[in-house]
Length: 86
Image 1 (cartoon, rainbow, N blue to C red):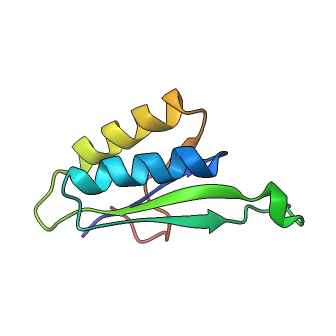
Image 2 (image 1 turned 45 degrees about the vertical axis):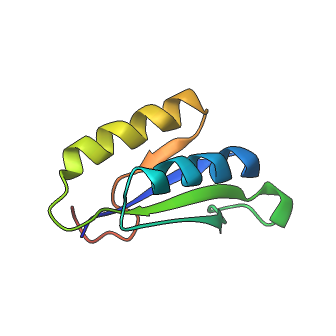
Image 3 (image 1 turned 90 degrees about the horizontal axis):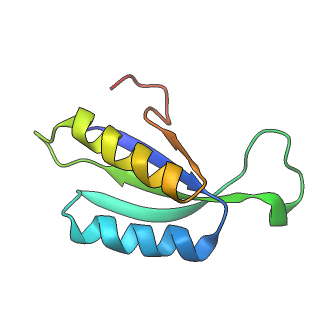
């Protein structure tokens, strides 16, 4: 199991990407509100798409796909959001 986090500035974009990724067959995809270090105001929090690969998936392929989505949508990608090592 490999976990990923795609952080985006807009809720609508996060929800659209989550729907798209869910259709691609990932084990779990959900939108969460991401409080980043130094942000006190809830309105400043970004939106994140949590993605968990299915067992046996190629994590390098997922990383490449999510990195590209982050760049296109002016967000950023965390390949190891919980520091567990991929």
